Length: 410
Image 1 (tube, rainbow, N blue to C red):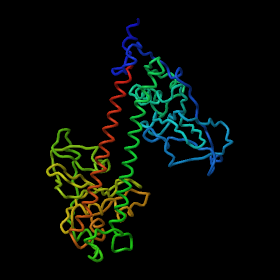
Image 2 (tube, helix red, strand yellow):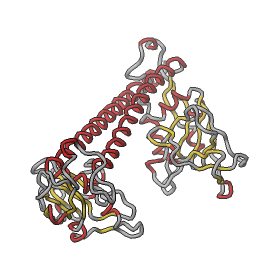
Image 3 (cartoon, one colour):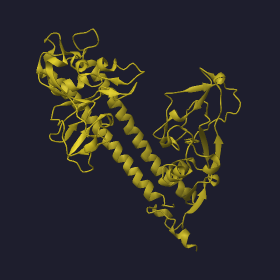
Image 4 (cartoon, rainbow, N blue to C red):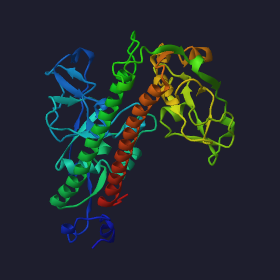
């Protein structure tokens, strides 16, 4: 027996297939066929008709229909999608999106796919879809990318090779195992979306609407406390501009540098320094002052919950509450429409100190009511963060299973 073939076995194998021998390297052309996308013109686009699946419809391994384009049903060159076809992005302005894929579910409207996409119609679609989630797939996509054009070639694509069991039942058992985990991740993600929507609803109900002086919902003990009062940030907080740290970045620095990237990624992207040019203290609110047109970072806030940990970079301001509950101010200030109105969608937005300190808002007269609102929202944030962690753990579990259920054949 070929010694190379003896190596092609997974680290983890279901007991009923232990004696089935080695896996074989197979090209995608042996596992199904490629179906090219449709090139259409503006005159083919209509309000209703044949759905065109594009890169934006592929999100986290799922087909989402939030952003839809339709063409005339009789448009020439359209290849109609079938349930369990695998939609793959083969051309995009961003290299990281090349190769992302999703399996076509039941119940989707009559659909084709755009020219920057391709369909793979597999003999065992659920198994092949899981092959497309492996490091072997990502490595081959990466190797196939051109130097100047972000695309993969269809002729090369069907030559991608994967270690595959010959027994269809083993393929199916692997696919069922991983698909079950995908379903759990999907359900937990839907729960996360529900929690986020719940928080949005709370924000709308716990704070007065435009033109109102009382919130829609009020805790019973504060119903008779009267109208909320108008104030500005300058009356209830101190302001300080962040300082430059770019020349003092260190991989092993003591302090985390709070810059716009840190805040916009919720702390996932972080730089370190030993120089605390503007140290942040527990209860401080750090806010992004500068962003590109239509950016999602402008006026986004970070609440400091650890002492001696963070230092504030330039283009970030530090707000230190003095006459208001800290967390209450954080929730009312974070991405407030007052600040967002300074983004004209054309040029870079730069919030000035006087603009920030002039921020007008309503607050309850009672500090206890402020605290109760903040505690309610903080509890919801804790649930959201716990759910995010749960999903991340499930995703890591699947990543581990993919590594063990498929041999490292590269």
